Image 1 (cartoon, helix red, strand yellow):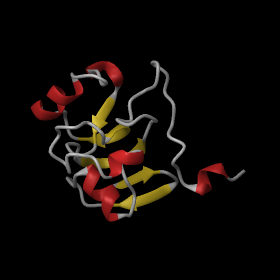
Image 2: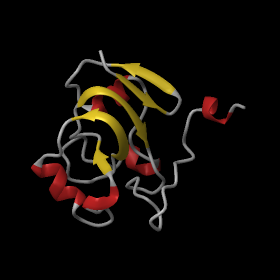
Image 3: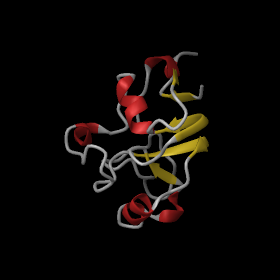
Length: 121
């Protein structure tokens, strides 16, 4: 059973589960700020659920590739749409700042909306 690491939590899920669904079921959001209410609900049309993913996930499909090729994203950003990404093994997920969770000015800036445990020394 794969484990998803996100905002200081480990979440077990079924292999093949959609990453966005896994996060939402655990009470976590792949969206920043107002995008939590203003999003396409998993249809790969808005791009607000973009996250950085390290580990075992599905290949990028046509819909995801098309959305990530449009501003503010780019295909070379290393981001994935959580609504189109299936978990195939253990993964570590990072959400960046910005309405769409894109890298800001080419830098990888992690969202300040993270678990308090991440701030503990």
